[in-house]
Length: 173
Length: 120
Image (cartoon, rainbow over all chains, first blue to last red; front, side):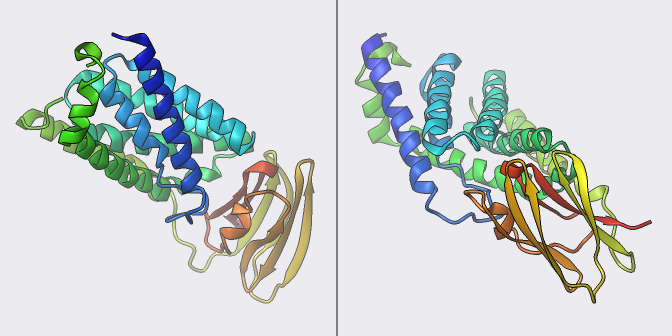
C-alpha cells in the first residue's frame, strides 16, 4: 500500500467531513434544538467501508473531531467527542462481526452517537433528567444513521466510486 | 458484510428493534401529569437553586446567574421557559416552554437545568 497516497486520501476525507459539518451548521435542527443530521458521519461510515484497517478510519474520525473542536470552540467538543467515540466503537464492533450490512451498522452508530452525547451531557450537568430526551434523540439518531448508511451504500456500489478507489492501488482494499 | 443471507437480515432487524426499544425505555418510567401539582426545579451544577410552583395564575420573570453566565427565565400560564441567555447557541431559549412532569430544558454551557416535577 502506497502510504503517501493513503495519507492524502485520509486528509481529503477529514477535509470533506469538516466541510460537511460546516455546511450543516447553517441548517436548522430538524427534530430537537441541538439535534443534527450528522453529515460528517457520512465520512466516518464511508471510511469504515474504505479502509480495511479499523484504525485508519478511527484516525480520520479523531482528526475530524479534534479539528472540529478547534473551529467550533471548546463547549461542544466534549459532547461530539463522547458521541463519536461511542458511535465509532459500536460501528467498528458490529462491522467486525460480519453479520450486519453497512446500513444497519450506520443506524446503530447514529443511535449511539446521540446516546454518548446524552451520557456526557448528563455527566456535565450532574443530573439524570436529560435522559427524557432519549426517545426523541435515540430515534432521530437511528433514522439519521439509516439515511447516512443508505447514502454510503450507494457510493460504495456506484461504478464511478469503484473506479476511483481501485486506481490508487490494488492492495488498497 | 453480505446482507443477502437470511441470518443477517434477522440479526439486523433484531438489532434495530432492540435499539428502538432502548430509545423508548424512558417513556415507561414516566407517568401522566393530569391533576398533579407541579413545580419547576432549577439546578446549576446539580445543586437546586430555585423551586417555582407552576400554578396557572402565577407569572414571574427572574434571572439566574451561574458562574458560567446568565439565563432569564419566564414563568407564565403554568409553564416555564428560558427567555434569554448569554450563551452562544441559545439552545435553551429555542427549546420553548415546558409544563409536563419529566420535561426538561437544559443549558449545557451554563450547567443549568430546569426540570418539571410533581409536588408531593
